[in-house]
Length: 243
Image (cartoon, rainbow, N blue to C red):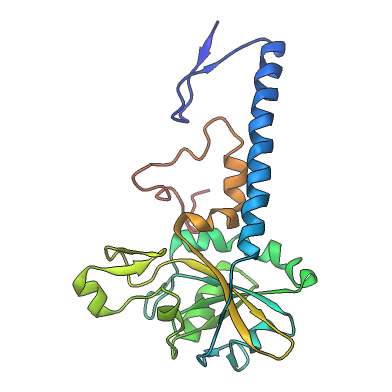
């Protein structure tokens, strides 16, 4: 039986008959169905998480005007915010966040029809955000939290004092300082009376489901083929890839 080398980290893949392949595929299908059922169960548990009322006033700088957190719902009851790593004076956004952001506009054709508004938030001043957004050609709404504590309250931006201590609270645990900005996603709900509640936040690998390209890469023989020590070091901003 001939063996074909792969770079997936799983060792050489066997070359087999069609019958043997079908048996292996059917066995894997059982595992995939288990994963689907588990994902559905976890999604139900996520929706049943308790909520925290947002008491603090936040004012974001938007393309047309200053907006509150409640304004960002744009008449809908559910709001998803992506915390994009673009700090004041950075010049360009994080390449990994840019990789994720390449997937946002396609989803955003559909989200409003499911009572969901989607907004990206960064701490950079609005002119710096707009310049980078224009460069990348994205259409989604992107606002600045530069004059608020929003990023700090949702644990995606960190102070100089935290950097000196080399300790931050990120992804629900204390960890060493890596950057003054980190990625994340937060979800909010607004009731009929206008009260806003925080329902969910995710960070780090919890953002993987946002990356459609990963869903394709997980299907191919080499998989994501990433450096385990720095999994996204292959990623480039889409205008930085060579022809």
